[in-house]
Length: 142
Length: 360
Image 1 (cartoon, each protein chain N blue to C red):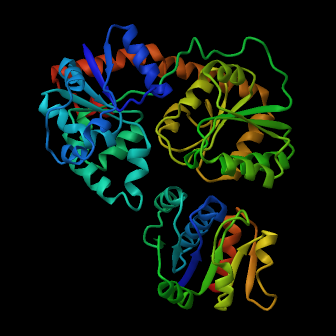
Image 2: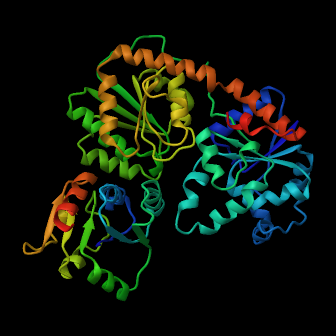
């Protein structure tokens, strides 16, 4: 089973609805995964509703707060870090994921890519494109 | 007959105000319970848990004088339901949208979902804005035999089609509604972008305001839509009607709905619609008749439907006329007032409605 991780504020700028649609596509394709979404914020209602509407309650875990130790464990256990951002202005842990040498799937926001060193393992997908995210995750990690 | 509205807001939202005006026109006395939270303070929790005590005189008199208590939202029912018992009043509860189809599924609302399941069945009768809402409320124990669907309604002689023809190009698309996440504006803009990319000459006007305005503004810039989209902010009813009359197509991309008022207003003005299959929307729009119903969160489907309508003015006219007919038949404000009066009478007389009557 693949463990997908996002640590990012629940903010529309971080594109969580598109990430969840990607999870639905993977689920429909029969892939075995768990998605842990760590964060809190104004977009909790929209995010939680999307999880319910898309039938992802068993696969997606919204973790609203985590200690440093818990974050450390999550980053060590994950197989891939996903950031589906539509804007560079949201708060997220992309840099930490890279520091943990975690493979990263990130959307094509130029300001986000600046933080990723050339030798990191990362893949860039179109923003607001759940199919591109699902395809990338499936090809690389399943 | 005297009905006390609880939780109607001050001032009430447009759809409640229309309902009130319609009822008053046919002789039903409507009163509003003043916001009593300020009187209750910590006693609100006690009230919610079954303790009932003397209310301030100006509040209790209004409850005593009413024949029927009409709770406008489940949240108000959960807090104030014991008033009906204390004052021996019949009660009805409106089920409209978010508090049934969104809130119970959110983290942090587990207690609300539990209370809903416990106490929703205790009300005497239920007004559902759509059959889909009725179905969703059944999941929380609402007995369908005590429910009646009364649709959202508009005045079809105010929201009338434009008498003059409007230029056919560019295609004028309009959206109305609060700028909130449930309305799916980012998906609408993606769909609109797709239609432009495939050659549609079009302009989109978005009427409304709300917490998601920065998101809408950012998205339309990010998608290069600045010159193709106008945000008007809030407009009054007259201005909304004028804009609808000058438009070709109504777009509604909601993710969750009861039954959208804006959609009914647009159909009343003779506009064909592109709308997502959220909540009761598909009860107002039959796919391919009054417009196109598309899946939620599918910009490709929105774009394709806009293209289809954009390239076929005869189809727009035909669908617009079908929409106007549908409003006259099923979403007429005068009929809605009569339906509410008969609903209230039914509750007061205590005649149970058969399950078949309720849900047929």
